[in-house]
Every structure is written in structure tokens, then in C-alpha cells.
Amino acid sequence: MTAEHAAGTKQGRRGLRRGSLTPELIVAQSLRLLDEEGASGFSLPRLGRALGADPTAVYRHFASKDDLVLAIADQLIEEAMDGLVASGCWADTLTDSTRRLRRTYLAHPAAATLSSCRTTQRPAEMRTVDVLIGAVLAAGFTGAQAAVVYRALGDFALSWAGGEAAFLALDDQQQKNDRAAWTRAYLAVDRAEHPSIWLLRADLPDVRDDDIFETILSLVIAGLMQRAPRPCRCPRHGAAANPAAS
Amino acid sequence: MTAEHAAGTKQGRRGLRRGSLTPELIVAQSLRLLDEEGASGFSLPRLGRALGADPTAVYRHFASKDDLVLAIADQLIEEAMDGLVASGCWADTLTDSTRRLRRTYLAHPAAATLSSCRTTQRPAEMRTVDVLIGAVLAAGFTGAQAAVVYRALGDFALSWAGGEAAFLALDDQQQKNDRAAWTRAYLAVDRAEHPSIWLLRADLPDVRDDDIFETILSLVIAGLMQRAPRPCRCPRHGAAANPAAS
DNA sequence: AAGGCATTGTCAATGCTTATGACCAAGTCT
DNA sequence: AGACTTGGTCATAAGCATTGACAATGCCTT
Image 1: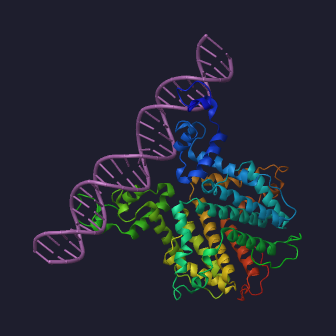
Image 2 (image 1 turned 135 degrees about the vertical axis):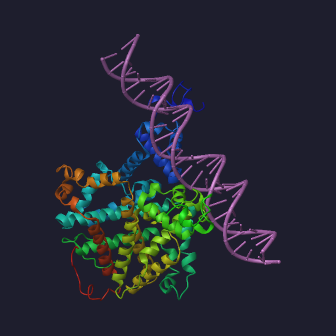
Image 3 (image 1 turned 120 degrees about the vertical axis):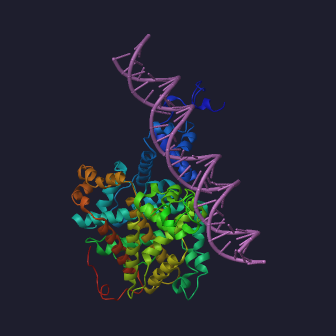
């Protein structure tokens, strides 16, 4: 009834059975560990122990910690972009995929921080890239200009989501400190020295992360809409000039 | 310049003289170490040795490694925004400060990676925030909306520059791999499976980082210009509708 | 000028990390 | 059946962040 009977039958003498550990299991447990303990609690010994195995067991399946991180990165993209398809409106496609990436990254901040600047070059990533480029082409960009615009949009999504995730992956203490800055430090600012901050001192603490994201996203899409050779004609964007923020 | 002769004269017996280490010196040497060895080569023991001191000497001036990181972050902002003043055109002010931050972060990628998501709440940061908010107010935004727009622009600059820096801070090997993806993997893509990538396969490898940045920056500014209650009237932006890319 | 004392550099040690090589049991292939 | 491979464990190395004890140094008071 103790530890070993769960794994199997009699071989209680030494740890795990033979086929107990698989790459998929290890990646899944890594995500769980990262979500619960944060990046600082994610070490290979702890991961091994969390799997009920030896602290060094993971090295049998991944050559190094970095190797494991790449597998985790791929898993995140898979999770974010599962079922993504191009919409009829290219602006919706771009908006949707950016929101998807952000949602997944915010759900796994520590894991996202480890992987946001890595390129995995695996199926999930390729599929996403193809959809994004498709949207850029649908907007009427071509050739070298289309390539630059795609990179700009893709890197924007990655760096923004990565940045937000990096903040959420900080210690609770550091996070509290930083958030408090918007109230404590800026609220008490000197009017003569920082007049502009002073004007907004009451508004700054109430800004919500979701609103910040939707604002920058809409700015990017609006800029794109304006420069696109073939603007979107769908109901929502067709005539719209200025629905302002939110 | 490291060891004992710089410090002075005879006391060779035991390490350094009394006033040898100052926070400024330590931060400067940290930057040098980060630039030359990368983030993985930046440890407090190494830093102490690089200063010609005991591996634990730094703890006399900074409570923890995190404390030191915050000081480094502040130094970077200082360096980036030194001499920044609001221009007559708010769009120029926003463009200029974003470019400044990026330039400094790219010059110190490893240091930037450590500090891009931290808030230091120190003079240099406050001054920058005040200038940025000033530009947003000049654009005609007010109250809560101005606060959101400022946060969107500020976080955009930080996360973008941080993202580019994070990539440059990777091992040379990992960096080569990732860059090669744009040629090797995408050039050989299957036409039927990823038709959009296939169309741009020849253009993707030639995209330059500077162009990507200027593209996303101009998209953001263009979107802002369109939504701003008080668009910029300066010569460059006044009538301009669509100067296209670059 | 002599004494007190906080500062700051050094030393020794703890408990954590990534990672390697030796060992050994359990399946697998011939 | 016997040899080989695979995968889990053990022992161990080297490096890191951090702490506490110790000692020299230079300032500040008297």
C-alpha cells in the first residue's frame, strides 16, 4: 500500500520499473512543476523526484536541461495554436493568433519565460507561421515587404507575450513590489519634478493588463490596416475609422 | 588592472584595500562581465574574482544577486535615456525613446535580459516615464485612456527590446541554429503543406532585424496617429498618409 | 594622539544545482 | 540460452548563492 505498489507489482527493491518514464510524461510533469513552483523550483533533481524516480533519471531521455526546455517550448506552441485556422478576415486571423499565444503563455508563465525566444522548427510552429504569412499575403503585401511585415507581427506577439509571462514568473515578492510602484511611487510623485506623471497619478494604478494588451494589439492592427494594400472588407473593419480604445 | 598593484602599495598579504570596492565599480564590472561572458558567466564568485577580490566580497555592497540586478537595470535605463528631452512632435519623442532603449539593450544583451521586466522606480526611470506620458498627453489622450496608452507604449518598447536582447544573449550555437531556420527549414518547405511559407521562401532569409523593428514601430505609431485626438502637425507627419515601409 | 567602533574584505562551510561515469537489472534479439 | 541494449540508480565532481565568524582598516570621538 505504500509507494511502490502503484508503479507495478513486486520490484520494490529499487525504484521504478523499466518503461515508467517517457519524454511525454517528463514534459507534462515539467509543466506541472513549473506552474506550481515557478522557474526557480524547476531543477532536474526535483523533476526526477516528482516523477518518483532518481534525481538523475531524466538524463536518460534528454541530453541536457536545454534539450528539455526546447521540448517544453514546442508543447506550448502546440497547446496555443491547436485548431488554429485562417479566418475570412486577415485582421481577425492575426488578432486571434496573437491572443491565443498570450493566453497560453499567461497560463504557464514560468515555462513561457524559458521558451519565448527559442525557435523549435517543429510541426506546430510551421503550421502557425504558414497561417500568419497567409494573413499577411491576404492583406496584399508581397515579396520582401510581406516577409518583413510577417516577422514584425510574429516577433511582436512572441515578445509581448514573453514579456508579460516573464513578469508573472517573478517571485511573488518582486511582483508585489513592482505592482505597488504604480500606486506607492507614482502616486506620491512630485508635481513640479514630474508634471505628466502627476496628472495621471490617479489613473495609473487602475490600468489592467488585459486592457494594455488589447490597446497595443489594436494599435498594431490599425497601423497595419492603414498600410495594407488590400484592407479588410469584413463587417467589423470595413468602414470603421475610429472606435477608440477598448 | 585587476589585482593588487592598482590598489596601491604594500599590503599584498591579503587582498584588497579598504575602499577598493564601490557599488558603481561593481555595476560597471558586472556589465563588462555580462557583455563578455554572457549571462551564464555572470556569477557573484566570478564577479568578485574579476574585481580582484574575494568571491564573496560583493555581498558587502549588495544584499543579494537580485539587488545587484536591479542596480544594473537602472544603469541601463540611465545609459539609454541620458539626455532625453521631449521633442516638439510627440510622435518623434515616442519613436526616439523606443529606439534609444533598443540600442542600449542590443549593446548589452545579457544585462538587458536580466532587467527587461523589472521596475526600478529610480530617477532615470521616473524621468523617462514622465517624458513618455508627456508625449501621450500631447497626443490628446486624457485620464484613464492616456494611462492605458502610455502603459501599452512603454511595455511595448520594453518587451520588444527585451525580446531581441534575449535572443542575442543565447549561446552562439543556439543563435546560429535559430537563424539557420530561416534558410534551411523554411527554404526547403513543402509547397502543398505550407503554401504561404513557400511563396516567401526566398524573401524570409534576407529580412534584417533593424527593418523588422522599424516596421513594427512605424505600425504602432501609425495606429496611434490615427487614434490620437490631437494628431501631430509637424512637417514629417502633418499630411503624410502612407509613406509605406522603410 | 589614543581608543572605540562600524565598515568591509577574507575565510570556511552549507546546501543547492547541472552533469558524468560506473554499475546493474530487465527486456530484446539472435 | 546467451549476448546486447536500454533505462534506472548510485557515487561523485565542480560550481553556485548565501551565511556566519573573523580580522584588518580607517574614521570619529575624546
